[in-house]
Image 1 (cartoon, helix red, strand yellow):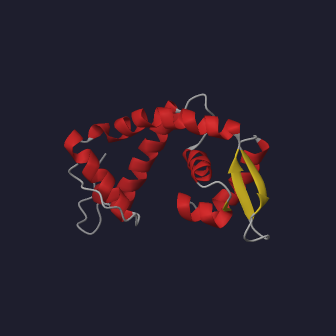
Image 2: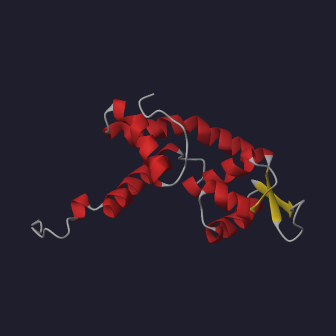
Image 3: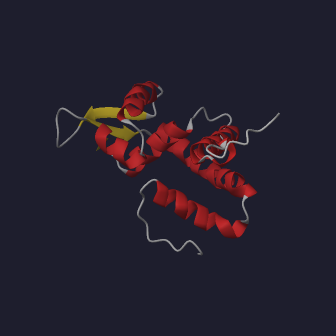
Length: 153
């Protein structure tokens, strides 16, 4: 395969391309680690956010989970049907839905969390260990999470 010598664009140093490839790799590792749990990364995020913030509205879950409302709106009915979440009217806004995790949903979150440490280790495994905290810090900054965290810790 012949590479282009164009100075204007190099796919292999293009940030968007590299992030997409890193995302694909991370999703593949997640899927392998979660084998048998029947949960996607976005579903796991939704369940985790709802467990940590019981009664949250779809808007709140959207903000907390960093997912778009359309994705969450499509996932919630399926998660309710599976018995992982329940929907009720939001206490402060009767037009909004409030989400609560069920015992089965919480057990699934526990199983995901238990397997997550290994996933993170494998995703970061191609980087030198001393760079792991810095890489996580840089990703957090890139997506706008403002946390006081020493990248050398």
